Image (tube, rainbow, N blue to C red; front, side, top):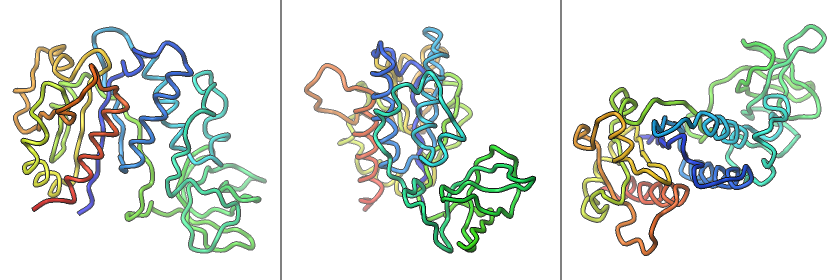
Length: 277
């Protein structure tokens, strides 16, 4: 059974970073962790302690830029102020980030649609635009399969089910409201106040191995998930099916950074999914 993992982080994720350069580096570490473990979605939920809409927009732009194949970035994204330091982002090197300009028959790629001489064509990152069979509008990102290379013909195709094809970035309301409406077989609330993952290891391996969709929630650098839930007069006990875990039970530092928490927790979850008894 494929496991579809999503992470939820607050829009106050940059509260400990004053510069755009620092925010870009932090965002890069987050998306690398998400990509390493094949996260399908990054939800950015609202921290009601202040207005972090600008930080949300910065995070969204950086996250989406990093996920977009390099050969599509100029047409799909272009130059934006929040991407001034995008050159510092680590390459994700996920399957649809093709580097080879030479296409092959049967290859699946992402493309951006454009008009050329009155016809809808597909920019597949090759030296020429592909003739396109499918639906869509100019400027739209689509997935195509290469049918021929001389000339290049591409047909709209579904994304490969057995290949990781990047993540989506989605806006979410406050954490409590999001959890009430979310539909996941397993939800994990991470907190240093949670139960040690060691104590819950057998339950985690069992539930994660059988869950098709998993959501892992993180607090901000200032507020844990407990305080995030209190913003809506809610608490962990309102979500009895969720696992409330401390995934760093013996930490020797005062705080674990958000990007460190994501990488470490997803690493533990990755092992648990595959070690079910």
